[in-house]
Amino acid sequence: MTESRRLPVAALVGSLVLLALCASGNGVTNQFTYDDRYIIQLNSSVHQLDHWWRLFTSSYWPPSWGGDGYRPLTMLFFAIEWVVGGGSPMIYHALNIALYAAAGVLVFTLASLVLPVGWAWLAAALFAVHPVHVEAVANVVGQAELWVAVAALGGVGLYLRDRRRGALRGRTAIAIVALFAFACLTKEHAIMIPALIVAAELILVADPRPLRVRFVEARPLALALVAVALGFLGARSAVLASVGFAGFRPFVPFQALRIGNTDRVLTMFGVVPEWIRLFLWPRHLSSEYAPPEIEIAQGVSIAQLPGFLILCGILGLAIALWRRRPAIAFGIAWICIALLPSSNFLVPAGIILAERTLFLPSVGAMIAVAGAAQWALERWPWRAPRVVLAPAAAAALLAGIVHSARRTTVWHDNDRLFNQAIVDAPLAYRAHYMLGAWEFEHKRKRIGEREYRQALSLFPYDPFLSYNLAEQYRAVGMCEPAVPLYRWTQALDPRFRVSHSELAWCLLNLGDYRGARTAALRGMERGGIVRYLRTIIAVANRELAKEAEKKSASAPRKTHESVQKTTRRGASGGSDHLSKPM
Image 1: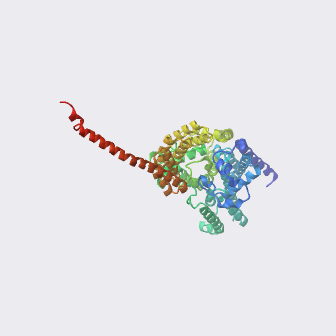
Image 2: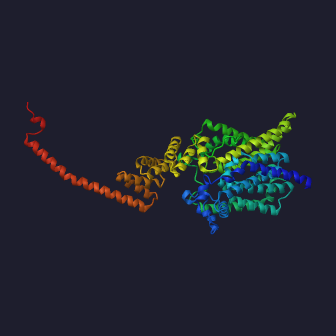
Image 3: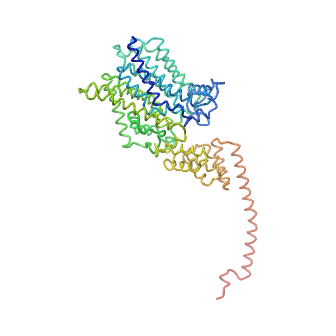
């Protein structure tokens, strides 16, 4: 490459870094928010490096918070950042911003292999300022998304570069396998990277040889990728044996409403329009997407039809443009593949929708948008669209910077984030639930109770919500309102282990000894703390014995009084009405 060509490319890359910094740089002063507190701030396992190898045998979420997920490299990075920065959140946010800028540059590198340089820059620039990325960048735990995106873009870009020139080189294959292994140990959805490589091969590589010949040539790489995937899944299954194949417990409303696979898929058809909106018009953002704001399907309904038609139309468009406009087809394929792990279409996910999970899919969305803009401009015979293109693109980039920078400040601290959540999603029960939990934690109990009650009124099917409110009442000695909430929790989920112990305690304090004993026995059946429950049973039995003694002691006295009364009546001539004068 000559010096005259290097300068423009260097300028384009520099401008992308600048755009990413303008959109996200103010997040460097953010604190630990939302999941950051449990994964990092309150998690002692990522506060030192003395036994760093143990992170490879630990779940991502601490056992006390569910023990979900397997992301050992992400945890190792968190530990390194904690030690280097002394626990300051600034170093975490600085690294997130740097990874974001790197991802923008890698999007440009990949898009340049698919589109002309100018259009590739537009795709990367739109990516660099996209407001839907704020959650992944401004929230520290979004770092996993950023690492996977960097690895996926690097791996697919390397593959496509070599294949556009001819055969895949051995050292390139080794680098791709290494990036795949790195990404898998960073976050689970990296398991889809081989599918992205297959899409690139089928859509973008102009190879006249039969597919059978091409796949035979790619067999060593394929076998290596499969070996890495199987090794990762094996290690993950060993660590997360109690969670299941998905690695995360299903979204709580799915569990609470006992949603099966069919209704889960139907629910996600209803979410498809929201995905499209967030990719193309992310004006309204939220940290919470939950029912009843998002409808949980319980059978087929008309609400799922728009999403089904949109999805079919997009897939049909990708097939139709496979040969004519491969950049658009590849962008659509990238979106679909990258979305699959968190989409609930294949396996149950721990969320129904989270903006951070759209970070990697948005790469394909922006490539498709730039490809569609190029196509439209080529088909338009007049000059006017060409004249307005540059100002329109500039306006879109400026709007993205402003919106992203403003949204980044929402993630500055939990007070700001949780209070904004009920503004952004007033009908999402989890927005009120999270604010209520935060208020209770900071001893603002009236506000906490109000938000919990609001969440219960919106969605009275989350056993964790009813249980946690009951616990708040019990903590201040208010067992009367706590008892019905404990019973409601058990009705929602009979396997909810801990509620039986607390219910037994409250019933004991309310004097319902028989009910306390029954609840304690059920708690023991479900694996409660045996010593604690035996104590409750012993106290209940003692009090019931005292009541029985009182009843037995009062029985002879009552009998004696009855005999005396009968004797008196007999001496007076019988019953009262017979002794009255005629």
